[in-house]
Image 1 (cartoon, rainbow, N blue to C red):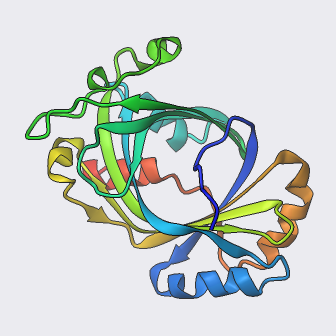
Image 2: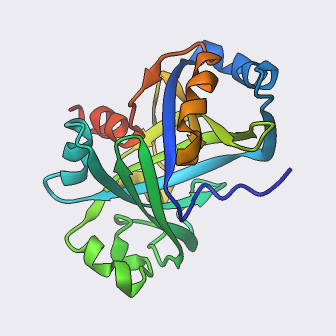
Length: 224
């Protein structure tokens, strides 16, 4: 299996589908037997994120209102849920269906026994420091992810399941999760293949969705 980056330096289109949990076990088979011949390209792994927002939850509001241009700021690491010593600092920009991520490796110096996982403890590159002013940790989330690639190499699909959300104050204990009752299938591709993506979508027998893990998590954890 080849490496999976979970990041890109170019614009790409994204389509999401929400999946009832009992149907997750059939998803891989649906992808493999479609005429696009998806195959699994990377080992399943846990993805961990801590999201950051303003005191008035500006980024949450942008996503709730469905603004065409919106962003999220987070750190991401893989594997164990314990706070890491190394992570990826990410700014995810979205314009409609088109996504773009600034992704840089970062080191972390979190207090492993208590406290909030502040960005002060993350080595954010100077060129992104202005993006982090006034932000504080608002959400921790975690899920398992499977990676697939279409036979022609044009489309990448990920299946995210066992989604859980926690208040960041529990991060030093690996999070105390509230579980989602849905899984998410994401279809990702370059903009020149957007017309073809409609044909791929027809072979996925689930609802197209604008579900945001960040919005879902904030709603669950804060009771919004």
